[in-house]
Image (tube, rainbow, N blue to C red):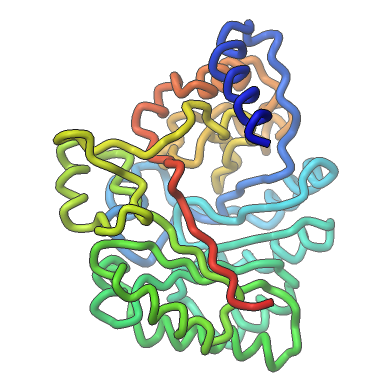
Length: 332
């Protein structure tokens, strides 16, 4: 396995950059990332949706989503149904999830865990959505609300707890309920208690996610952000210090996004990378041109060739690291 990884690295870093883009052929990836909305009800300080995003706000329509799925379901196996914004703000999200699930796709969405109602619980289970990530960034109001600005800790916990209870009451295998905890300076000491709390609630899995200090800020601002947010334990950091410089932990120069299908924004625009919060790297519009047509376009081939070794313009501010998440399974 190690030899295979080494071979892939050599090919990607030394051979592919020399191949003309017209000769490069990328197979359709089995994962689609689709943005249900770029609206959000919180103001998290390190999220561009709350701070610097300028593109028009809106929600994906059911008919547009169905058009994408009808074209792509023969190639895709899984949908990541989020990007920038709070997915539960789109009133049709679970109707869309149900449509994709009926086509045989594994649909996985994420929520900041603030928007709950009897209807939402019913919709979650009737949609047969495969997985829901619920975000909780502290076991107290002080630590959770330190980052999740505009969130109410008690209501957030109550909403997550009821989701777990409804799953048990309905004797349902779906969805897998995954609790995501962004590890920061303010909350890293709570991880042991979090594991116990999640187990007691009925959570299926936990992911301990390393905090990104901002892809749109200057190096100086990122270092200032580190003072407030970077955890003390090195295993939870996606950054390290080299002298006085803050650098990403990145053990390979090759970008996996070069072989993915981009991100479909709520209006059908296909952005090349998930870090493109403002749609600067749009390759085309899948609703107007067709998803496969955009994926196979010369424009996307040229972009992918540059993305392989991170020479595409947006790559300059990339904050993807080799230390992203640490999964913890709670149930057998």
